[in-house]
Image (cartoon, rainbow, N blue to C red):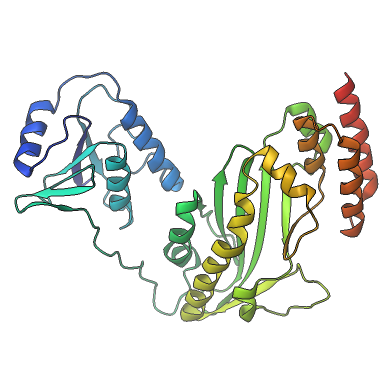
Amino acid sequence: MSYVIHLWDQPTPATWMEAQAVLARQVDQPAPSNPRFVELARRIHAFMPELASHWTLDAPNGVLDEMVWSLGLASTLPDNFYPHLIDEAVALGLSVYDEQAGECFVPGPWRLSEAGRERLVHRPIAAPPVPSGLIDVQGRFRALVLPRLQPHGFVLETPPPRGNQVLTQLVRHTLLGEQCILVEWRGDAASDYVASLFCSITPVLPEPVAKICAPQTRIPFEVVDTPQINAFLHRFSPAKPTSRGYLASGVAGLDRFLSALASWLQAELVPVLDQCKTREDFLAYDLAEPRHPIYVRAYLANLALAHCAGVPDLDARFDQLMLRRRAQGMNPAQMAAAFEALRSLRNT
């Protein structure tokens, strides 16, 4: 730990000298646990879950018994971490005191210093450097795609690479369940990668219902056209419109693809997922299938959600799903068996 800042709730100082006085008066003073500290810690974890509790050793869960939360920040944190922490803290009504910089950030948001008070505007952050000649898929994804999806509530998960496979996964939790946008990369960091896109929702289901619709408890979304990134298609066959790989060659090629990918996600995929945040919204959306260019697969979980919602027309919903299932080349008998089991469960 190499950089210490101090946070408190009230009072909110109006000048740098007042901030110094508040800190001197409140530091090391006992106080009940502050729910705003706890909420800030929760938001930090949601912002970068891969850090776990390693961003600080000083109450990483926000639970402490003092008026001032003195945070020792890890020296290895990414450049965009501190500005995000400040933004979240002042949004919660907290003051952030930075002795080393000679600044205090307060709701408004304002930056207080010896020079006076000014509107808080963060300095531009340079994109993470890429090793010369090597393709840093996860690093460039974090720099170019994550900032576009973060405002929509998505967090980035980057599992360790395995062989020639690299994964970048955007996850968002909703009332319906977990929404996931997965990009699977295969290739060589010294030359190029081919990216495959997958999107799904894993709804929260009661255990008896989940058992009935296993192994199809996840609902995939299929994509048959991607205008913003079609220029990167690799070995594409119109006969298999959902089998889409995208070639990113070299560092510059990867950056071009990621910028285009972020635009497609924002313009096309995220609006679809925004309409599927609750069970009721998903069922309304699913009922209007088939759609183009992004459609919902007719999985057992779709029927399970209708059962859980107690829809009065479960038979009609089943018939519609069976038609789509046959059109999508999936086993209708599996859906029929699940329907009978769910109907029996409803009658018990």
